Every structure is written in C-alpha cells, then in structure tokens.
Length: 253
Image (cartoon, rainbow, N blue to C red; front, side, top):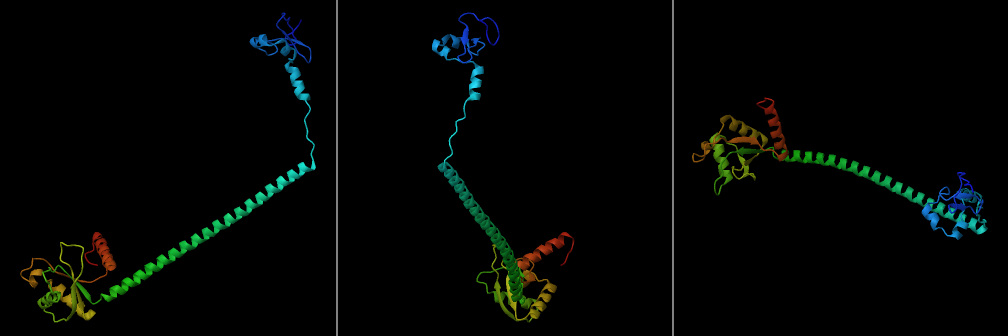
C-alpha cells in the first residue's frame, strides 16, 4: 500500500483512508500528529477526509441565497429613506450651527469695534475733563516747604509770606492740600483773584528765594518753593518730562 502523498509504503496501522477519494496516506503526511492519530476512534477515521477533498468541498459548496421579496425591498427603501432624512436633519442642524457661529463672530467684531470706540471716547473725555480741571486751577499756586503748626490758620501764614515779600496782593483763599506723606508738611494751595496777580506774585517770590526762617525765626532752616498748581495728570506729565530732560542734559524745560 503506497501513500498518495509521498508514494512510500505504508506500514500497517499507520495508514488513514480518505472517505471521499478513497486514497491512503501516512498519518503524518495527512497533517495529523501521531498522538492525535493514535487517539482517533474507528468511526472517526471512517469519516476522515484529506485536505484536497476538503478544499474541493468548500469550492463546490452551493451558495445559499434568499429570495428577494417585496417586503425585503420595502425594508431596504425604508432604511434608505430613514438615513436620508437623518442626513437632511444633520445638514440642517449643521447649517444652523454655522449660521450661529457666524452671528457670534460678527457680534464679537461689533463689540470689539464698539469697545475700541468707547475707549477712544473715554480718553478724549478724560483729556477734556483734565483740561477743564486745570483751567479751574489757573489762579492757584502751590507753596511747598512751609511748616505746619497746631491750630494753624492758613490765611495768617500766607499773609506773613506776602508781607515778607513786600507784596500788596489780596489772597482770595488758602488751604492745605491733603497728602499721603506724613513726614513732610502739606503744600499750601493759594487762590488769587486773577491769573495776572498770581503770575506777578510768583515772579516776586522766585526772585527773592524766600526761606522758612525768613517768615518765622522759630522755624527750621529750609527753602520755600512757589509753583503753579496742577492736576495729578499734568503734574505727573511734568515730572516725567523733567526727568527725561535731566537725563539728556537739559537744566530747564
């Protein structure tokens, strides 16, 4: 008995027969392991088929088909229509979402432009208010360095200064300007009846370079300074300008 695969003799007990083609094979040529082959029952061996016959069986196996009925077609059409409606609904929602995003984008652009305009207007209004505030101080002068005394009457203090400078100017009002510095005397704000009176007085004061002890001998030795009174914005701008000028070598501005 020869093996249909290797054509060698098959020893008795080592053969296996294909139930389809009736060919004999060595068990190892059939792809079976010896341990598995020895365990196979007689009935199982009688049902065994070789790999070639198994391939032919698969290749020739009939394709099972199911007849297409009207109900099947209707189900397919319904499924397609459902998917189509779902897609249409999704497309509509997508368009609405895109429209909403565009509206929000346009609204954001409008808000940004409006904020820029309002910011520009605020700067302009702030500038005009600062100019008006400075205009209201055109008759005011600051005196820096005058010591404070208990129960001070500021009008009496400014009269001493006016007398010492030899001026006959009439002071409208005078008061101390609030300050966050507690280690220095607060500035005196002096209001004149006109800009000319203020300018004339400041010219006299700056020429004489009055000192604290010139006004009251009991006061400390220190200089007194006479300046135009300015708003916080203008004073800050003046300070920055003066600092910048000093850095480049200018003595006066």
